[in-house]
Amino acid sequence: MKFIIKKSDIVDVLSKVQGLTGRKSNLAITANVLISANDAGITMMATDLETGFEGTYPASKISEGSIAINSRKLYEIVKDFPSDDINISEVENRWIEIGNKNIEFHIVGMNPEDFPDIPKIEDISFFNIDAEIFKDMIEKSLVISASDDKRAHIIGIYFEKIEVDKIGIGKHDEFHEMLDQLKDTYLKSDELYSESSESACQLA
Image (cartoon, rainbow, N blue to C red; front, side, top):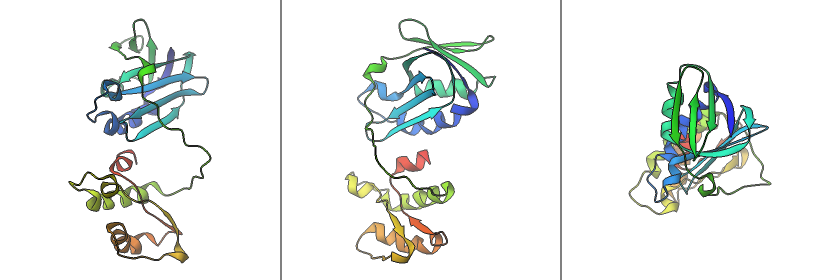
């Protein structure tokens, strides 16, 4: 596998996925990102076995293939890389070469076939929301969701799209208490959204 990608296209996303790949796990490969090169560019995947990430980015493919490479090491190389164009290729025995004509790094990868599957969600409807509003709502909700209680329904965050003219806010749980506190801020928009999980905040 071999491709050329621009530093500006992947440095930010590599920074954000550290929140997933940096978590302790019994599977060493979850510290890696899975990168696949194809005609459309590259697809990058990361997971901590609870939250999955997948994104597609422009790249000049020279040959197809997949690699699993340590996320933190790749980010550190890309972040400080001296030029925008970065050549990434797999050589032999899963060794991965990163560089250009002036500089080269060599990192040993892992078997991409061992990378955990990320569930595919199909036939769903997406909607748009202002990124800054979304991030602000998630950050405010972390005050409530931050707890020593490890039960998923307690540390998770309920997320629902609500029509403004149909809002009914009760106080039978922490989620509705949060909505009551935040509704005056976000009802300036046509719609009100609530959000889910600390991982969403890291990726927002």
